[in-house]
Amino acid sequence: MSDQYQPKPEHKFTFGLWTVGSVGRDPFGAPVRKAKSPVELVHLLAEVGAYGLNFHDNDLIPIDATPVERDRIVRDFKAALKETGLVVPMATTNLFYEPVFKDGAFTSNDPSVRAYALQKTMNAIDLGAEFGAQVYVFWGGREGVETDASKSGLESLKRFREALNFLCEYNLAQGYKLKFALEAKPNEPRGDLYLPTTGAMLGFIETLDHSEMVGVNPEVAHEQMSGLNFMHAVAQAWDVGKLFHLDLNDQASGRYDQDFRFGSVNLKSAFFLVKFLEDVGYPGSRHFDAHAYRTEDEEGVKAFARGCMRTYLILKEKAEEWNKDQEIQGILAELNTDQEKVSPLLGVYSSEKAAKLKARSFDREALGNRGLSYERLDQLTLEVLLGVR
Ligand code: GLT
Ligand code: MN
Ligand code: MN
Image (cartoon, rainbow, N blue to C red):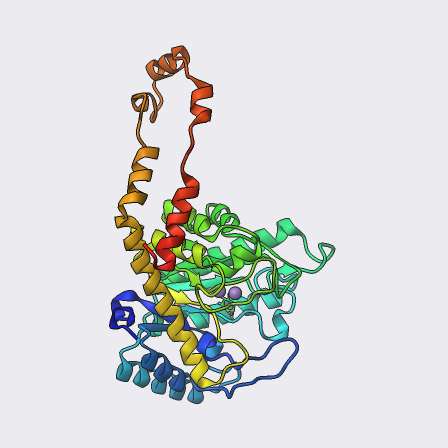
């Protein structure tokens, strides 16, 4: 393996404990790998070169742990982090596994379930803050329906808003300074999940009391399940200063949530995503929310984790090549030249500009006849990716 693709702390590669810790259970089959303890997972991630890890409350502390067990687990985990130098940039709450959340957490019809969800999340926020997390993710795992007869779509939004407003106040009251990041998904495990896309989340965030504290955690596979272009969702979030975190993985379109190794299915989309993140200088974690194929043993899990990071770094290098490629840049420069010097008429409105624009004649036919060289541009992109440029 060439050293230039060796992950380093500055690349900020992180994995969820639940990712490399996946035992390969699926709806049709039992676990195929032995469960590893959180401490063992810290060492596995250190061995493959990750910078950090993220967890749900119950990835670390079993839901029925006694206070004494909790303290022991926290102590051992902290010692493992110290020994390996790994950090915990993000934490989250499991609000989907236990039967109590079968009809959602913050959007459940039952006020006791909603109250329990708040309690569980406050405790989980405390845990995340104790480990120095800066971002707190909310994936509405079961916030949805199978039938709209069961819950009001409008009331559910109000309940979700109420819960987030409550937790933002909690964050302020505790002085934690966490940023909240909302993760959208269109379906699975519910028939329909509320706020199914990153775009929907961005609209919803503006209705919160502390919208400045809340952004998004887009996941590649989730936007692709909706048939959307992931990089476009990321660009929109970045544009409004809301790209607080992101979940990298891959997915064939129109399938269940596959959470495959980053770049393993849609290589060109992965390339444009990495190029976007590197071009704008996204400062956050490159977090992988994916898991190894069910066919894999421990070595396969390590190969999976290494593959995610290595592919990211290769694509980063390809993005640099693309940016330096003279033919590509020549075509782009040509496409963006102001041949008829109309730029002064664009931009911020003025009545003078409006009058000039209305008086001007445009050669619609000639403009429409221009070839745009996008075939050549895309082929050049592929050739950069395929390593033949
Ligand atoms: C779960 C889900 C992910 C979420 C995680 C955070 S848990 O694995 O499939 O998309 O990001 O709750
Ligand atoms: Mn995710
Ligand atoms: Mn997923």
